[in-house]
Image 1 (cartoon, rainbow, N blue to C red):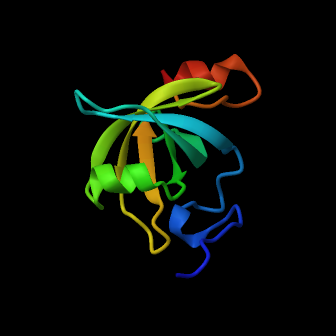
Image 2: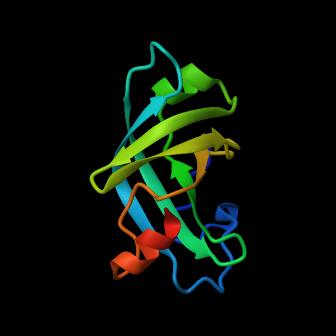
Image 3: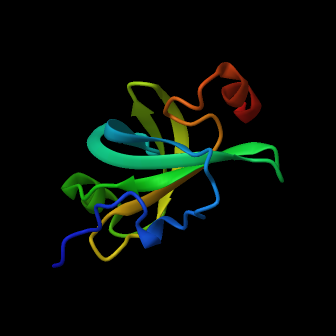
Amino acid sequence: MTTPPTDEHSPDDNRPDEHDDEDGYRGRASLRLESPDAEPLEVEVTLRGHFEPLDGRYHWYGRVAVHAGLEAALGGKKATGLLTTPHGEAVGELSDVDPWGRYRIVGTSTPPFAVGTGDELAAEAS
């Protein structure tokens, strides 16, 4: 198996280069899948996001690092989960496993990380 991309501008992030106002988070997080018996999984994530003026909402997205428990629970299928970082929590959809076994996670809401340099952007995302 090859090594997953580590640069911040990985081609699988579907990240337009023109978004200079993007925010993000890289580090530990807790992921609780939407299931009655799901225990939280301690995972590593790389997240980014931006306010989209066309729909007036904040879009955040990224990848969850390879995690045996996550793969065992999902087996490559889509799922919804609550992602919690030291900065907040948000519900996101897990899907699109890349060749390195990392799940993509996306959400349209107040993100689970600090946003912008002020409170204006966070208020717009609500």
